[in-house]
Structure formats: structure tokens, C-alpha cells
Length: 479
Image 1: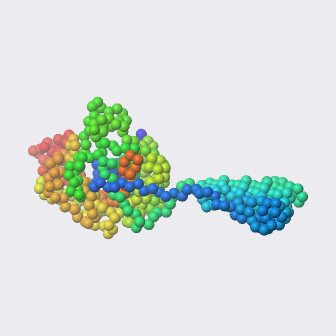
Image 2 (image 1 turned 90 degrees about the vertical axis):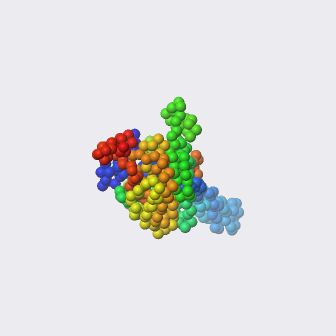
Image 3 (image 1 turned 135 degrees about the vertical axis):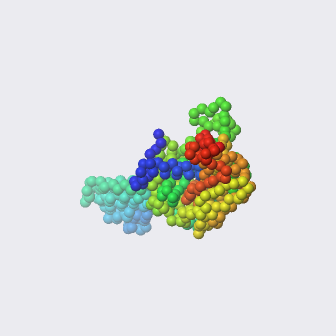
């Protein structure tokens, strides 16, 4: 059973379903390198960026305790003891507070009181969840002080109350109250780094993709989403054959893998046409997304499928140039982070691409003001081929791209069927090396393009075809 996704309340059930289908269609192509919106480039280095986390350190030394009392057994001496030392043996001396915990937590011991003195209070743990120090035991005739309170971060425990003094001029026999427990705020999102210090590593090579995340802003349909998942391996069916590569554009052929005998449930056919385990989406713990207008997203996996998503982001969810971070701290990826930047909405001037033999194709758009994002183009003219070929390009955001006639001819020669389609997007891409492949993060703004092929007439029924032609419903084309 697939999880139910909640869009903004203003959308109808039909609109929510349609938006999610389109968004997932975009996202699947981006993650896998082929499919609905497969946009790839040259081999990109995958580099894992680890999150620096604060870890608990040991306690600092206790503070000096006695003021007038000396070391234990030395009457009336001067000098203090460290880390909860005993107060002087003479009556009337009084110890100061016990040793405080060091930063990032440890235990500070309360100072013991001398005869007739009073016990020092145990100091609370510092930031980082140290245990609070225990209250010092009262000396003869002394009175117990209240134990220290626990540290703030990660739930430090309160110290024990000091025991009451007894004997001549004794205070109350009741024990002093224990210190209060510290508040546990859970995971604290570290601040975003300086954007000028961030270097994006580009998309994964399509032969290494195991999954990833995306922030998608669709201006035409008016929605913004976050979506993602990461598998424990590369799906062989998503690894394309590279037919040509001119440095900016590639022709990619989807593989057709056949295993004999047929693979069992839970298996898939490998590139060597042998049955192997089907990669499965893995739990990543809590995934946090920071840098968005609505604040930090904190997402747990949706089951079944270990998928992470929010389909009702504020729209737009960022300002152009804003730094966005996806972070994990546990689970399959451990401590990891990926970065992206908010992109300007893509405004395309050439909304219809016409492909014909021996003719170049030019597409134009409004170039962005920044230089971080790139432009990706994906064209498919063979919807029903056994091994359809796609044209995918990634180029600088200059405002114009021309596909030369040789690339156009190679695309058309590979086959034409069904309804040709195209997508274009402005995007940023980052990637890291995961345990079983490459994981990537996209921030993008997509635009759907109309694509026509001279001499090819797609059809859904006979009314789409000229009188002298018949609609081949299997191939969705007039013949």
C-alpha cells in the first residue's frame, strides 16, 4: 500500500494526485539518470562530506573549595582543595561549592564540610549533558546544602541532595533536595556554513546512482516539494548505454536486460544478465533540510519504502541563491550532508522544439544572474521502442543551446514512436559517495517543452490522423 501524501488543503484530491505523480516522475528520472527526466553529465566526482558533531568531553577539574579551611586535618591552614576536597578539621570552617563539571559535561563533586562547617553544594553539569555533582555531606553540627542542577543539553541528571548534619547545633535531619534534571531538546541543527565556502560536486555518474534527494519548484503547476530515498545498490535497469558524448550532450540508450530463467521475486536482472538482489530503499534516520523559507524540515521515513518527503513546502520555498542543506546523522548514510542553492525560476522562450533530419535545433531561455546553476535538457522521441534513446544535455546557463544536425540525426535514426516530449530545468547538483554507490541532491525548477518530429504524427485515436492514415494504437502514431 502506497503512503497517502498531503498537499495544500486548497488542492482537490485529483489535483494532489496529479501533482505528486508529476513530481515523482521528475524526481525518479533525476535520481536514476534515465527515465522520465533523466539529465546526466560527465562523470562527476562523488565526495562524502561528514558533519562535524560535538561529542561529550570529560569533566573539567572541580573548583577550589575551601576558603579558610586548609587541607583535611590541618587546623586553620590556608589554601583550597580541588575537586571537592575536604574542609579544614577545625570547627567553623566552611567549604565553598564543589567542583563544577567541565564544558560538555562531567561530574563535579560536592566538597565535604569540616566540623561545624556546612557542606558545599554540588555543581551542575555543563553544556553537553554531564551529571550534576552530588551535594557534599554535612559535617558534625553542619547543615546540608542543596545539590546542583543538571546540565542543559541532552538531559543531564540532577545531583543527590546532601545528607543533613547532626549533633550539637545540628541543622535539619532531612536530606537536601536533589537537583533538577536537565532539559533534552533532542538533535540541534548546526548553523549553515558560509555559502562562499561551499563547493558543489555535481551529479553522480548514471552508472553509480543509488538514490538521492530533490527540492522541486514547479512554477507552471504551482507546487514545491522535497522528496528522496537511497537504495543499498544500483538498479541495473537504470544504467544507460552511452551512444555518444560531445561534452555537453549525450545520447543514452535504456538497457534491455533479459535473464533466463526469469528472476525470482526480490531479484532483478543484472547488466551481465544474471539474477541479483533488487536494491532496496534504506532507513536514513531523521533527515533534516535547512535553508528553506518555512524553517528546518525534520523528516522521518514513510513506510513502506523508507521514503522522505514533504509535498506542501511554501512556494517559493527559498530565495534565489539561498544555501540549502540536506543532513543525516544516523542510519544507512551515517553522518552526511549535501548542499544546493535556490535557483531562479526558468523562463523558456522556445517552448516548442521541432526535430527534422539534417537540421539543427536551437532552444533559448532567459539566463540567470548567478553562475551556480546549470541548464539541463532531456528529449525523448521514442516512447515505445524496445531500447529507446534519449538526448540529455547539461550546459552553462547562457540563455541559448544549439543541437547540431549530427546529434539530431542520431536521435531520430534510433527510432520515433508515440508522443515525443521534452523537459528543461535550471538546477544545482551535489553528490557524495555512499556505502554502495553515489547519492545526489538536486534543487531545480522544471519546464515542460512541446516536441515535434517532422513527418511523425502521434495519435490516441483515429480522429488524430489524416483521412488517408490509420492510428496504430500500440505505437500511438498515424501510419
